Length: 83
Image (cartoon, rainbow, N blue to C red; front, side, top):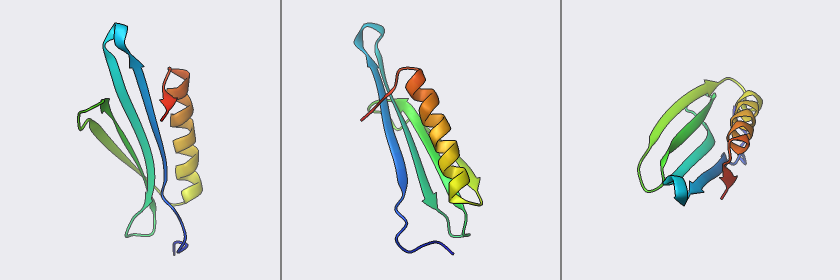
């Protein structure tokens, strides 16, 4: 069962370069599901649009957190910055 005080984890990143007409966002969020597992939700696209989304499920929050940290690190290496 999930801990009662567990807060959703999330990271909001963006990459803006007006010279290249680049205005992108990337959002990572971990949420509990109804089936006592964890869902890592990734959203990305152009700032101002709905963008795209992908979900990935994990049995333990620690696995979801590790996956989120790896994705966040990869995006930061590509030039994204935290909002």
